[in-house]
Image 1 (tube, rainbow, N blue to C red):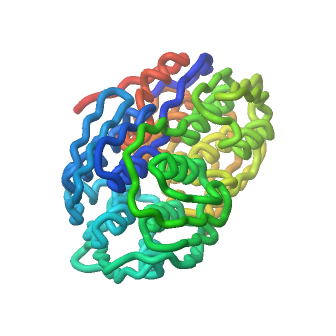
Image 2: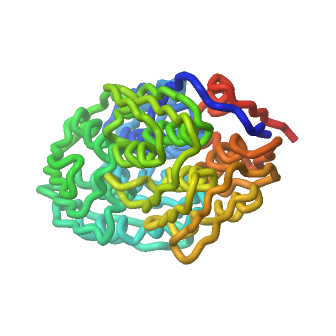
Length: 413
């Protein structure tokens, strides 16, 4: 239950990125021994990934924001269906298993209902490295006598495909180039950790990654990069509630376009080395947004952009270029009195002064948080159902919201 009317004011501290830590946990499979991740977010997906790794023979301990993974000399190559089916990031064990075992059987993953996310590019990349890969009985099945460096050109800068191909290539023979690679900060974070483990990678953060294979990697201790999506969410929350929020624990360069959009909506944004401050004094002004791979506007912040548009002065268009089903969120905003419609991959929103409370249902992590933010600018109390999604991506979300002055409570049963 979320009560409207509060102006959010105060400081929030952002932990490690959900979109990084799960891939880093998978990368621990690349080296025998004890890998330690610090600044890990305390979210539901971390224990889920721990279960996937345990099913592969690793020992995993989670203590606060520290995850310790002890990988055996020969991890199992069959990822358990029950663990993998619960979330999308589990498929990132595919690359490490191919690198270490030259074979992998990974159940097709589950996750948020935000549209089709096929594994064609993952498989094509592995085939380029010398593997055979098929879909059999609901699993990705891959096998190779050996992996050899190759030139891989991605049709789209897919984050997941880049990660799997990269992790397979670090132990392949020879040189691999990945063209049209994803450039997200989480990809850079993975490259940094792999380099700490002994991998040879050039071009992190650019469209071309060059990987020179090595014989073996060694465990490391690595600090997970800050979560730019959580940070951006709080920035949008400040503008929607006409608040004043300072966010710590994130490089503002990772949100350059997002912060520029908030300034376009009328906010004052102050940037510093490990965070930023967003101050909004009056009703925000409508801005158009189009999601694109980094350094474009993140698709994971698209629901927040739409939520902001619903209470902004003027008309906005939000264009979704990454996941086609993310506009299911708009139907719930209409329940709250939003003047919004969708046409293909565009949403057109005419802002209203205030939304009206109503029961709404979240379909994924970001939609759930977007609906909570909408409830903060609605009259009365808004019921947000299926909030377990939020727990998968936002640690201590309710406590942080209360600290900023919001009124929220979780009802059990």
